[in-house]
Amino acid sequence: MLAGIHATWEFDGDSVLIRYERGIRTPRLLQSLRERRVPHAALSSVTLTPGRRGTVVLRAVPRPGADPLLEAAAGQLKDGCDPYRLVLPAARETLAEYYADELRTCLGSDASAPADRFLVAAPEAPMQFKAYDGRAGFDGERISFRWFWTGASSEKWKAGDQTFPVTDLCGVEWRSPEGLEGYLRLLPKGAEPVAPASDVLTGAGMRTGTATGVQPVIPRPARADQDPAAVIFGLGYGPVHESLPFAAAVLESVRRKQSAPPAAPLTAAARRDPADIAERIHHLGELHRAGLVTDEEFSAKKAQLLAEL
Image (cartoon, rainbow, N blue to C red; front, side, top):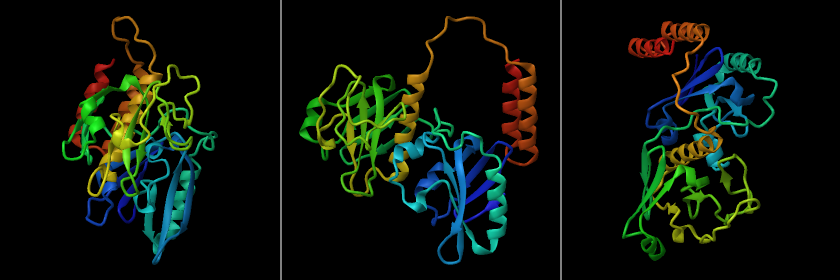
């Protein structure tokens, strides 16, 4: 275990569990995330660099496409909000270097390649946040926008409150509320992108600036304040710690729905391999002995695994 400023990293056999502090000095985005388990397979490299005021910075660099939160952020996060950054006192540099070396030995042969799917879990629905012109909600299956009469444009009032099933979307676009004209915009299938190629993130994990191969093309308003598929931010509205996890959860759900295989006919439930169940129970026991799961969590998960036999 490596305890730093704002977070603690716990090293497991196949992953790193990052627990974020709840103190008032911890960025609110990290507080909202609480903890994240990052598989070694999701990482491309590990760095250790000098920090400010007698600190060193250990950073695990995720593979492109491995983390829905960073994919949705699209490079807009400040260093202090980077969930893969651990700041430590310089006196712990030797210990940090040891853990960095250990972690580097765990990286796979494909660490330099983009991930073909999300490997880090997205924030869980349901969730909601208050934007300047409406309230956005996501229940895991659909996104809803409910307009405020004090902020919504006439175009949005004419369109009425909106509901978007995840299956009707191809991506999401998030512009940080810490910049000018921040917003969250949903991208319905067949919609004509209105942003540059580097700005539109699709559910397939690719950025596109054209509608090539998507028919028919649906014209879209150029401005987010006129687009019923978007909510806009403003001073005190749509803060990063609320709107970014929301965008990441929607993006993960869009991609999962796109890649889900066709539903199979209902049959008797398949039985799991007993050896696989035994291995998972053994691993769960190790986490329990290490104090990483509580007695209640251990009992509940063990019963769930045994029920799969």
